[in-house]
Image (cartoon, rainbow, N blue to C red; front, side, top):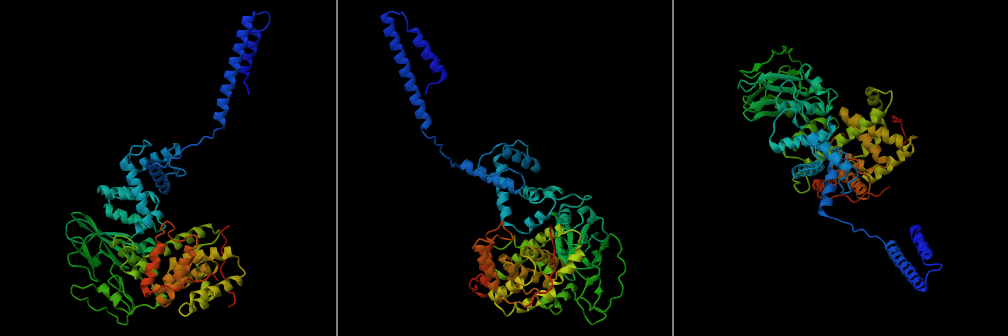
Length: 553
């Protein structure tokens, strides 16, 4: 098909060679017309061939493209929106790079240096491993972005307050400022408000080096994360030539007079250590009553009126652990998780399959991790409930006690498959929709764990499994394996662990630490280590009492 310009050219050629022109001209004109037409046909044929020939673009899977995808994935994880990780560093990706550079104090060029890229990608990989530092960062004001500055300062040896997302409060040392922000991340008050609360921080020279040492009492924060049923975490920071060394204790009602330090190592006693210099004289303590406190340290109930004199060089606080162990149903999971967190930190992070040496501790770490996720998820659901106070939520969730008691009583004697079947019948007879039950159970998980009410928390976990959310069976396995809210039974725990494992292996969405797929292998190995075997996979398979109901619409 000729174009308009070609047709005009041909017409002009025909006119130029027609009429009274000589024969030679006629022959020449015919030749010209023939050559033009022939050339046009040949050219059009080439064009058609070019149009018809499919255009194939060679896909490139270059190392650079793969590196770009890694960079985009890491940027997205830390909240610098780079778009879909397609390996092409376009305008959106370059803008995300500039945001990352500005956050880190690098020149915001939009083009990563090799160091900037390596640090970004390695930080993303490190965050995927998880651990207490990552969980607490997610709860902080800067979210996971705070990890970037923290890890940058670790790598460079920087020790300035305000780095790594930590504020500088009234010239406090870096270590103390970091602890203040750590506590504020799990409490309603801000760090500034905590510092204004009476008794939250006390100063004294505890090691006699002429410098102020610091004591933080987390009971003043109002956060259940740091407190058990009768004791809260107390942090003492002693000055050393290398900085301030943190010492952690579990106590309540103590002052700086209860501590003495030698260089960076501190100990707690019931009487003020000789030579201790206090920032302010403590209020005289009332005479101890039976089951009361001595020297500010809360003791377990005891019949004697006066506390025995502390052994020379010993810790009177150890009397707390010499009392009879509490029953399984009254043990404090909050206190237990505080101790697990300290052990995890001292061990350098969570146990993995490759370094699994203590199955019970490994499962304890995972239990406390799942508890944190359950609290965070439930808190988000509570925020959607209109016109209901936290006290009202707790009161309604307490209804789980009598409702689920028949099922709690069977945990130690009934297999998981039979009990799941009973729970499903209960759900069908409850006259509540699956969504209502799921929302209510999620809220009551938060309420139970926040208040250390194991009956409510364990009952809510059972309801979650009953409505078909099988990954929550992991929580029940942990309760049985660790003995919280139910008699300790590692054997009975196996079936519940396997219920959760089977659900995740068949494609169920993870509800705890979804970014850590290696958890599945760890729970398999650790649960097997408790008894030496894992129960066989659980096949998918009473009268309804009044349940609380929360609507998040």
